[in-house]
Image (cartoon, rainbow, N blue to C red; front, top):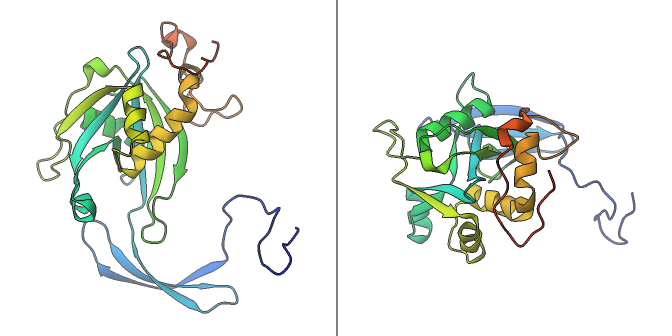
Length: 244
């Protein structure tokens, strides 16, 4: 590959995460807690041992619930102490999210969390992509789903009393959700990521929902009978709609 003179910057390197040749040389639990906080000693080939303190949260999911017929997004409001400590705005607007339990698939988690947090199981769940929210501090990897729901059936669920989760639901037009994103009114990471995806793919929502995948070449989540969406179209927007 071509190197920029006088630097170690590659101009034509592939833009993709790669595996690392690394050995975990030691592990110590500093605190168990809700999620274990560990000190790890790792050695990469030809390098010295690195010591890192990490929160071990593991896999999680987030779901963007959209009602195609009404052109609405179902959001939730939830208090987060960490957000309060960061900027004194701890009453966050979020999307459905939760950690994958043992022996549970991300798809099953996404469906369960929708029932628990917004009171309705999606008619369709489409896996979009996965991302690491803060890999310097936590090993959490979030898989984002698009969930097609009937917003009229949404209701605050009944989580375990000790969890003190969702305090309110918000049924908002897609335009209003994207305006909140553009105006910097929301700061929850999974919500921002999901709304950015929505802004890029708004004109393809009905197509994606019918196909059960974001690409005609990939089907990694589910297949959906065309008849299921015979009556659905994306709500009006300034972007051209995909032809069905």
